[in-house]
Image (cartoon, rainbow, N blue to C red; front, side, top):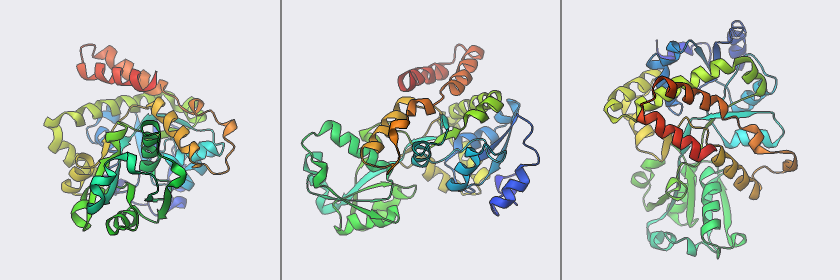
Length: 355
C-alpha cells in the first residue's frame, strides 16, 4: 500500500489526525512520525519502510501530517498524536529558544543551500572579499545565509556586516529572480527547486553550493521530547537501526533505480522528480545527529538575532541534543556486523561530528 493511501483521512486536517491517532498509541512499539504528503525529504525513513526494515526491527510507524505550529503544540503537551518531528530545523531551534523542552535525536538531511548572482556580477562575487556594501536577498529565516555568513565571518575578517543590506522575499524564487535582475547583488537560497534556477531564470548564475563552504552543515533533524524518549526509547533505537540500514542501501549506487522507485511509490511522485530531488540538488541524506553542527548553527543564528527577543541565557543547546539513541543503534549494528566497512565509516563520522 502506498503512503498516499495510508494518509487518506489523515491529511484532511489536524482534527482528523487527533481522532485517528489517539485510538492506538498505547503500544510503545508504534511511533507517530511526521510526514508531509508527497515530500521526499525523509527518504531514508521512506526507504527503510519500503524495504521492510522497520517491520523487521519490530516497530510500526504511523505517518501524520502536522504544520510546525501544530507539531510543536503536540510535542509540548507530549500528545499521543506525535512522537517524532522529522523535517525542518530552524523551527526546532526557535522552539527551543522559546523554552520548549525538546530533544534532537538524529538527522534527516544536511546542506541544501546555494548562493546566486547575476551573470554580469559573477566574477566579482566569487571573491568574498568583495562583500562589503552589497545587497543580499533571501527568504525569511534563510539557512544558507546563516551558514554562509558564519563562513564569511570566519574566513574574511575584512567584511563589515553592518554595510550589508538584507532584503527579505516571500519565497526563494523571488530572491533568485531579484538577483538575476540586479535588484540585489547576491541571493542566499535553500529550496528544492533551485537546481533548475540557472536554466529557468535568465541572467542567473550559481556562485557556490553552501555545502562547498561548510560541508555537511545541519539541515532537517528528528526531534522529540524527554517524555517521549522515556516512553519509547527502545522503539526509537529500533527506528534508527532501520534508518541506518536504509542509509547504506541508498548510498550503494547499484541500488539507485530501486531507491528511486521505492521513494516514488511512497511519495506518489515520479522517479524523475525523486532523482532530481535526492541526487541533483545541494541536499544530502543523513541519519547522523551532528551535535557539533547543531551547536554551531544555533550560535550562528543567535548572533544575527534569529531568535528575536528569546532569553538565550536560559538556553544551553547541548542539553537539547541526545545522540545516545542513534549511537546505540549504530553500536548494535556494528556488533552484529563487525566487519562492515560502511558501519565503521559511520562510526568515524559520528565521532567526528558528535564527540
